[in-house]
Every structure is written in C-alpha cells, then in structure tokens.
Image (tube, rainbow, N blue to C red; front, side, top):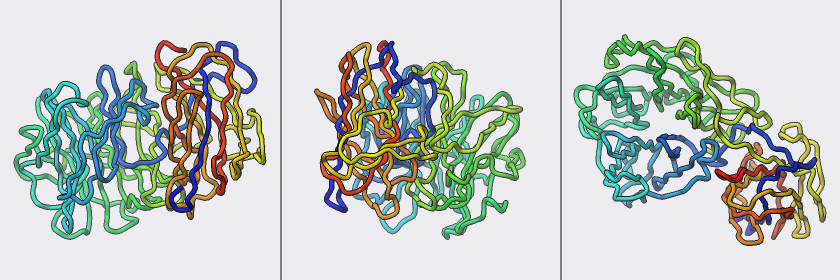
Length: 465
C-alpha cells in the first residue's frame, strides 16, 4: 500500500466446482449487487456473444467484455485509447454500434475549458481490433456538454446529453437534437428536462444529467440522474414519451415528480445508470454506481439490479445492501460459495459476528505474516474459472490508496486492489484451477491494517460446471 509502504497478499490455491458438496461449500444461484469495487458511470453494450462494459477511468477509454453479465468487470480488458496531452480528463464513455461502425461517445475537456462531447470511431467488425479515430460531434454548440447517448426511434436517431444553457455553471439540463450521422447533429438543441422538483435541487449547481434510453412497448423511457453526484442525494428520475410523439417537442415528455431510485439507510448516492438484458433476453437489468461509504463523494463502486415493468415503465426496488442477495440473471451459471468462517484459521486470525455481512460471521486480522486462512473445497473438473473474494478494509476513512492483495494458485498469481469501502466488495480474476481437494490459502505478506473476509465465490467457465 503506497501510503504506508505496505503490500498485502492473499495467497489462494483454488480448484473447480465439485459435485459432492461439503458443509463449508454451497452451490448457489444468487449474488450480491456490487460487481465492480471501483468505478463510476457504467455502461454496457450487448451483442449476440458479449457484454461490452466501460466506465469512467479519467485518463483513457477501456473496454471489458464477457459472456456473463455479472462478470463484466473481470472480462477481457483492452485500452482502446489513451488520453492525449491536449485533454485534461474524460468522463462517461458509451459504446454503440451504428451503421456498422463502432462509436464511443465521451466527454472531455482541454485545460482551463469545460467539457464537450467527442466520439471515437472504429469501422472494424471487432471493436478490439482496428484503429480508433477521434471526432468531434458536429453541429453542437460550444457550451458545456456531457453524458451523450442515442435514442433510436423508428428510422430516426436523436442525440441526448446534459449541458448548460449558457456559459456559467448554474444548472445542467437535458437536451436533445436530431442526428444526421453517428457524429453529427442538426438543428437547434431542444430542452426536455430541467431541475425543478425539491429532490433534484438539493445541491448546487443544479443537476439533471446522464440520460439513458430504454423503450418498452409503446413507451420511450429516459432514466436520468439528479442532484449532486458528489453527495448522498444523487438519485434516478424518469421521463416518458409515447413513441408516436415528437421527441424534439418538450410537451411530448412527462416527468415523474418523485425519484424512482434513491438512497437508503445503507446505500448512498445511487445513479448514472445503464441497461442490459439477461443472456436469454427475458430480463432487463440496471447497472449503476453508488458511494463506497456514507458521504464518500466520488469514491464509488458499480452495482447490478433487475428492472420490473408496470405499464411499460421501469419499476425499481430500493438499492440492495451488500448482505442481500438476488437471483442471478437468467441463463448464468451457478457459483460455489465458501464461507470464510468455515475455513481453517492459523496465526492470530479470529472470527467475528457481523450482521452487515452476507455470511453473518467473518474472519478478521491479516495483521501479521503468520496469519493464514485456509479453504479446502473439492473440485470436480480442472479448468479456468472466475475466483472472487468478498472482503473489506476495517479502515476506510483515512485510506487514500487501495491495499494490494494477491490471489494465487500453485501455478499462477494475480495482484489485485482492495479499495477503501464500508461494504464487502469483490476482488476477482480468472485462474486456471486444479481438480481434486486443494487448499486455498489467504495470507498477508506484511500486516498492519485489518482486513475482514466474508466469503469466496467460484464461477466455472462454460462447459466446466
């Protein structure tokens, strides 16, 4: 860990799923909401093979792709564009495929200037191949603009974004304009939403941002985020329109007076969402970010929850805490769940009751190199799998850098980051796992801070269940 000169290591020797379960291992068809322990502004594009995932990294554009929705954050990773020196920061990328061309929309700014919308374009069939070319969005004015996305309605496309009316940071509104190509709009921008209700106006400057489109039946739904993204009041609102109406006419849109998704006593600042379907196409899912702790500002993790529908409008439950499970997306493989408290404890490790954890009893310590936590599952078939450890730092207020940990088998190891969080968050990677009964060892190379380990989960890749 940079700030204290400490590196933590989790040493893991992990096998694959067994058809013979023991008391300390359970095959489950559910999962907790956090799927990425660090990030903001998530977006998913889905084709017949992959879920493509991206998020704000600040200084590059990175794609991840996976055949499983819940594993997008640990999918095949590729940086497609490094931010050149002429820019200062980049926000909220979105991957689209339009007219056979891959387009990534994002906001970027030059030093001492506000953000504008840009696009990366790639005509290769595979977005992980070929060259990406930077283009400005032609036809837009020179005012602050972020969070661009696309509405496709019958034979016409429209560009939606969040921006300023003038040149001062008073309020962000949601605008729309007709598109004549993937990188050009035409005509005057039209205003369709401004912060107006009390729940949208709890911080200044006033915020309506991150419009996201999902069409159901005859209803065009635009979910958006309001209030300050830097505080707990960040929440999701909803605009709707009959698909026969004109989206450029503000009178076509109806805004819900109350937020449709907002903070609870344990989850703070949920917002800036995207959408995805389950692998079999039967379910709709919401991907969104939320704070890593109460009033953590822009320190956020990425979460996933299902969408229900009433009269073609999205209905969302409250954000789930990290000790609440939900059914896996339809068509996804079950996972093996191992409680840390059922493992062998060596050194000064202890168990502790924690009602905020999923397993209710956790293992704490790892403050000395002699501390070891040993799992002993039995594995049916060798092969590659996703291995996830759910853990958290006891101290999340004063840690400014992540603690680095290592997941290790007899044949390989992966060094991963544990970010400060009040939640049990996943650290995850792909490992080649041996068959048979194998020890899984969790240990600390150099110990100072306390880690709390709740559980391990193992997800077999296709054909290895």
